[in-house]
Amino acid sequence: MKKNTRTLAGVAVLGVSALLLSGCSAGAAESDSNTLKLWHFESDTSAMGIAWEEAITVFEEETGATVEFEEKSFEQIRSTASQVLNSNEAPDILEYNKGNATAGLLASQGLLSDMDDIYAEYGWDDALAPSLQTTARYDENGIMGSGAFYGVPNYGEFVEVFYNKDMFAAAGLEVPTTLAEFEAVMAAFVAQGVTPLAESAAEYPLGQLWYQLALTQADRGFVDDYQLYTGDVDWSGRELTYATETIKDWTDAGYISTDATGFKAEDAGTAFINGTYPIFYSGSWWHNRFTTEATGFEWGTFLFPEAEMSPGSAGNMWVIPEKAANKDLAAEFIDITMRPEIQALIGNNGGIPVAANTEDITDEKSQELIGNFNTLTEQDGIAFYPDWPTATFYDELNAGLQELINDTKSPAEVNEQLGGQYQSGVDDIVG
Image (tube, rainbow, N blue to C red; front, side, top):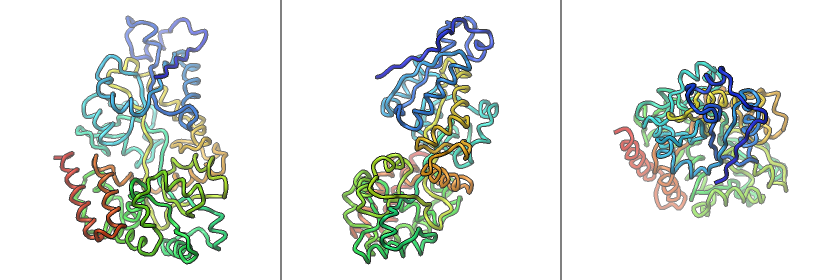
């Protein structure tokens, strides 16, 4: 484990105002009451790592406090959070994964601080679109979407279409604006002997494409039923029937290769990087990699045609443990990471800020990426991910789609199988 303690030179005495800010009593040790203990798992070269390093500098300059930063891996935090946060070794603030099985579970166990008052004080609810707030709020059972705020996301992620501009130009094709045009583009590539979609069914992104197709037929009520358990999900209804039947139709038409059953996400992504496929539908987390590795051709992005909603969510969150010693300092640090200048660092380094000023984003590809994300959030179009409802549905969905494109089960049989697995998992959660 790497430990990095950053101290502002010249800080000698903690004043009364800073002591009150720390949330500790006057009898506490000065070094403890004026130190923010912070954990996160971002690399120092990532968009968030770069932005948060600057936030640490600003925080120390403005508060006179010291940040004691410990770099942890995602797995270290995930596997030890319950034990550490229930002890006196808890940090004051840490990055944690959103969702029912992660932040929701810790919130239901009383290990995370209720942040409603802090949200009201700093106005974070005004800075975050409603769909981004969903993964920050949890009820008494740890189910996202309602109840108190337990975390603050300050970046986002979503799924969009990456395309090879050179291959489109060579084929005489333009970016489609309707689903019919999108299918016509894919048919044109097939006619030229090119499989259009880079896909993986052993892992994502085929499941994300399946969910996106369902979203073209869906409204927010369907998403709430599917993701938040607000109502029953009809697995023979138009949304999921259309999604599964379309995946089968696109496979039969040659838009998706049956070889995708053995491909992982890395295989699909690198095949797009290598110029083998002209289209890759996947997450914004590929953006930086394509910027540095897909150098043999020009590429661009667009939102899925005729879809008001797409898979995506707020990013991982800042949370404050219930046993944190310096909750007020933690809140002040979070607020700094929400400032436009820190958000701009996220945006200009390949991330997706949630509260940046548009004019502060200067990189052209980043402008396109963030513009697409903002389009979704402005129309309440962030619809989360297909595997989120249960702990086992990611593997179950992949397995079902493998059977679909292998033609070992019909669309109706796949939906019946997936529906039973989905409901079993939901019942385990809600009782």
